[in-house]
Length: 126
Image (tube, rainbow, N blue to C red):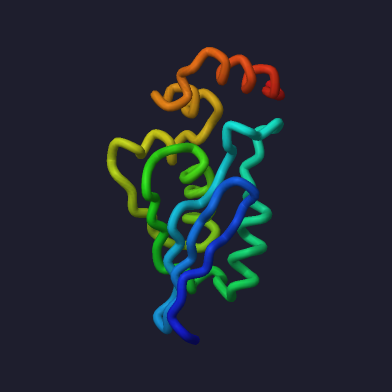
C-alpha cells in the first residue's frame, strides 16, 4: 500500500483520508452545511468512500478534527464507535462532537445569523 492522501468529496464538504502502510487517519468527518435543504449528515457517503479506499474497522487509527464546525465534526462519534478508533480535537470543540445537532450548530458563533436560524428551523423535522 503506497502512502497517499485521498480527498473525500461529500457534496459540499471535504474530508481527507491519509493512507499508509500502518493504517489510516481521517481528517474531519463531514456533516450538514449551510446550503443543505435537508439536515444531511452525509454518513452513508462517508462510509462508502472509506470502504472504497480500503479503510475498514480496525484499520482506521485516528480521526483528527480540524475545528468544531458541524460540517467537519458531525459524524465523529459514529465513526469513533463503528471503527473503534480515537478522535483528536481541541477541547473547546468537544460540545459539537458530543452533541452534534441543529441546536449546537446554531449556538456556534458562525451560525448565529437570524436568517440561518430561520432557514434551518423551516427544515426541522421535530
